[in-house]
Each structure stands twice: as structure tokens, then as C-alpha cells.
Amino acid sequence: LNSIPTQPTCPVTSTGSIMAIPSGGTAPFNYKINNGLFQSSNIFNELLAGNYIVTVRDFSGCTASANVVQITQTLPPNAPLISSDKTNICGNEVAI
Image 1: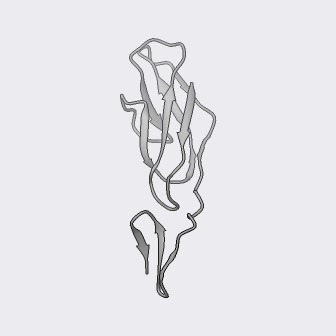
Image 2: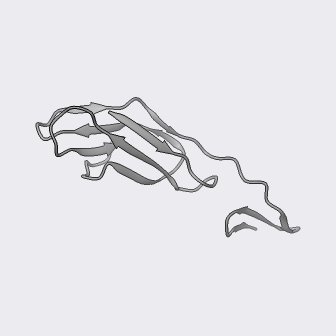
């Protein structure tokens, strides 16, 4: 089982994802991360920074897990100061 993480595009946002790619086993496959429920999609979206264990289950009920997949928090982009009390954090988000 290979897992390909996509890191979040902005800090403290749930824009990370993981795509699981099984090898061997008998299709169809189901997938889960951590202690979640199995699902038919091999892609997990809207993930925050953290460590995830990806598990795949094949038609025969055999399971395999990937090593811990890490989604890391990105650093804030260098953004201009909007005013003395507001800072552009990422994209159209503004912190006050």
C-alpha cells in the first residue's frame, strides 16, 4: 500500500489530502484512515496537519496499512499588511 500526501495550501486549514494506492490483493478495495469507517474512495480530502494511518481492505477481507502518513502545516505566505489590525493570512482569509 502506497500513500501519497498533498500538503495543505494554507496554515491551519483542512486542505490536505491523501491518496492510497493498493498493490496486490483482490478488487474491489475499501479504505480508511485512523479509526474511521471504510469507504470506497481511495482519496481522503479536507485533512488538517497531523499523522494518519491509511488502511486498505480487499474483497477477501485482507487488510494492509501504510506507515504513518504525515500532513504538515505550511508556513504562512509572505503577505502584505492590510492595516494595522488586519493581516492577510492566505488567499481571501483575513485575521483581525
